[in-house]
Image 1 (cartoon, rainbow, N blue to C red):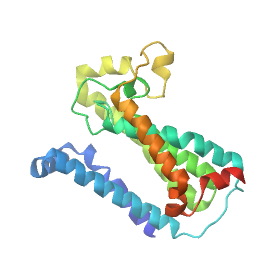
Image 2 (image 1 turned 180 degrees about the vertical axis):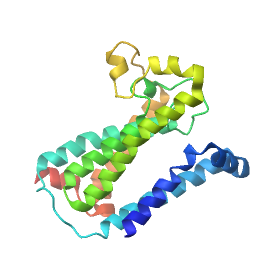
Image 3 (image 1 turned 45 degrees about the horizontal axis):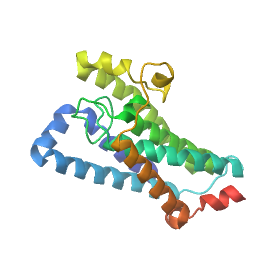
Amino acid sequence: MQLFAAFALFLALHSVPAMPAIRQRLIALLGRRFYLALYSLASIASLAWVFYAALQLDYIELWPPAAWQAHVALLLVPIALFLLAAGLISPNPASITFRRGEMQPGAIVTITRHPVLWGFILWAASHLLANGDLRSLLLFGALALFAIAGIFMTERRSRRRLGADWPPLAATSSIIPFAAILAGRARWRVDRAMAIGVLVAALVTAALLGGGHAALFGADPLALAAS
């Protein structure tokens, strides 16, 4: 099945960062910036193929759509976009980022050590709830499980890689969003990357709700929320 082939490629590409020997060889061959750019393009292309393959499946309803499900997606997706954008451009030695080589964590890490993965979880889970059909279960359910598994795998790799630097980082951050702040182990703060994340999330949300989502995926979230 095309969907399984596409998802297998997606998984294979996202296994590269977990293989230091292969990753370092590619960085040495291509240069870090070109490697990151090429890897990002390949990841986006593989994700696009996953979506395309899922859309070729027949629609089989699992539960009837309701306006409140769309409302949940309208609430969670902008938060997910913020976590994705801020997480990717913030220094974060513990998780996925374009700036992992920097040891001083960005402000987003006080919210959670894994903002990018939590962004994927919220995005996938909200779309699964809002759609309620078999192909969405296969697509968004698999992506949510992949991101959840990624948190535990990244935790294990980061603990091993950081060594003595891990305990201070773990003590002032948390896996669960806001857990460290609520426990008094971290102080809420805002930096430039978080401000950019808010701006990016707002712009992308406006573009999607202004017709982009309907043009790309054939569904208008605002119309579904009003139904």
